[in-house]
Image (cartoon, rainbow, N blue to C red; front, side, top):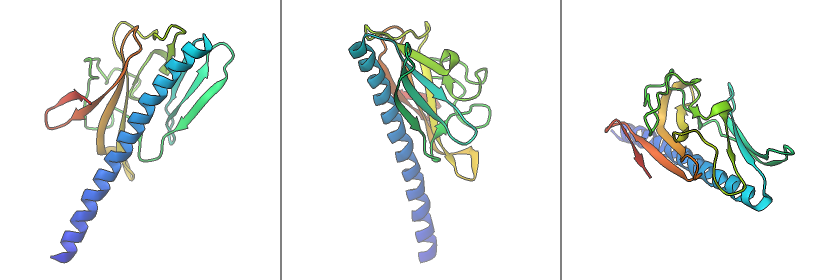
Length: 176
């Protein structure tokens, strides 16, 4: 009985640890998108956040558009990656109801996997909210979720960045 209790405790802690990593990555990404906004205003230049999905290493780069100067480069840890609606049993739509199954399958709903902040602090996103979705995959099988997806959403024109978490039990996104 003691062995079963110890194993059950490890499962709970490994799940919550995975969830904490996804939340931390989401909060950091939101902060970096706000950094891009601040840098665009301070430099009086367009600043781009380019998302780079990879086979083994997902991440993003923040840089000035005019001279391609890197402001910051971030690679996700193995416990976090861009969401793949085609491979993972989870949400099939973004918080603003954009179909994920028709996307490139990488959880990034930005034209060219990038968005631009303008010198006036606004973004040039499309008419709808643009979204990046990350989640915590199982280390042995990325099609199994250890931590639910979190969406980082950029509102059109204003550049406001917000987080929404997928609630599987409700089948809906909820703003954090």
